[in-house]
Image 1 (cartoon, rainbow, N blue to C red):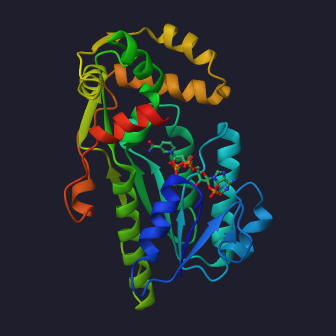
Image 2: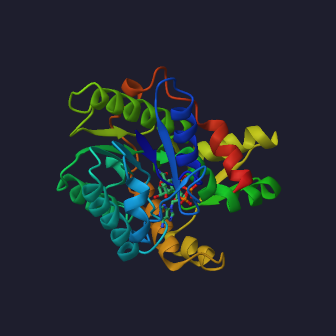
Length: 291
Ligand SMILES: NC(=O)c1ccc[n+]([C@@H]2O[C@H](COP(=O)([O-])OP(=O)(O)OC[C@H]3O[C@@H](n4cnc5c(N)ncnc54)[C@H](OP(=O)(O)O)[C@@H]3O)[C@@H](O)[C@H]2O)c1
């Protein structure tokens, strides 16, 4: 049996949908607000919820719960590793962060979690997810709104680009890996994909010039890219009501884009998808207008 955590979130919901649509795959949902009827209660901040949440689970799809300060995320993910071991989970599939993001502040809790899971008694599979196209759209949202009026898209991407991927592609890979692992365990063998780390980097890289071009197509008029400094970006973020850790992560993403680090050199995505990765342009533009 497979359990997917975080099914109220965008990625967890897609993974649950994909697994539920497969004949012969037994899947249960986990979420902080589960009532034990349609979904189990699985709250990483409440370790007491995890023994019941993980009971009878062979394959745990652990959706990272990264929206908090690092100490909170480490405590959450450590509690999951302990509870999965105690419950006899046989394989944990963890949604991590792609290698290109290794110098961002986001990487620390992910790499810590990878190491913590690797020390557990279960098999692990690490899905190092690329940055969502929807995330690049969200990072561009305020500037896109301004560009609609001024024809100038001001953002702190420097001259770098970010490799981005459709969240649905990441969900599709997760579904495949989880279903194959579960089927292999059910037939008495070791879980497929055990001990593997997959780099699910996007295969399209977009920067300020490209986003400005896409916005121009949407608005039916030219939009020019004007690079902002990181200190201007920091000042703009200060007024947006974000938590301090969100400001730090956002600036880190911008700074890593400018440095050229977020442009991926290789990806396992196409190999694990049934077809080519989905196009990302429309996802970026619509997320920039719906963030
Ligand atoms: N690759 C990227 O570009 C990127 C971008 C943003 C975030 N991420 C990471 O990927 C994860 C999934 O992304 P998403 O788009 O689905 O995010 P999302 O829609 O904002 O969902 C947040 C997720 O965090 C879970 N969560 C929060 N606190 C939790 C807790 N105490 N215990 C268990 N689960 C908890 C939620 O589960 P519930 O169902 O319990 O609410 C939900 O699955 C995020 O949590 C974050 O770590 C990746």
